[in-house]
Image 1 (cartoon, rainbow, N blue to C red):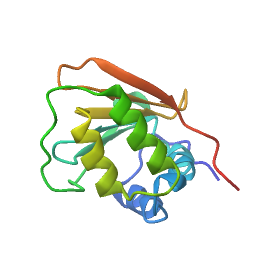
Image 2 (image 1 turned 45 degrees about the horizontal axis):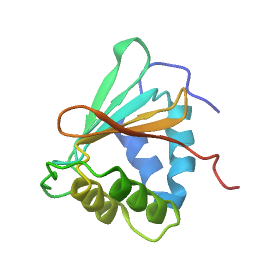
Image 3 (image 1 turned 60 degrees about the vertical axis):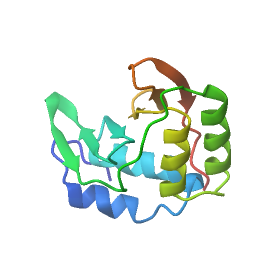
Length: 138
């Protein structure tokens, strides 16, 4: 059952995130967030802060999920692609992926539920990579 209202709670987001054990679970997580009304979210790698957005400008902010990470000044798309590949295979947990993203120069990523993509940005705000979100495994 989809929640068509614009308001969702941080508790609903936490409930969805508790089902995620690795990057392999990410597509299902995105579908769960979409079902409660999240249209997109920004994840800030350096402090682990996430802002979730819904319809009509609705926004809630999650607390930091990890320790402060130093973002590499030199962006590495190859390093980012490697981190994504092993994370999607379920070989790394979320904190390890965040560290690898920071090492690759990722400052933030934006996950779009409408077009089902994740866009990664460096410290200067330049787009590094757009990744399609795969369909969830059943």
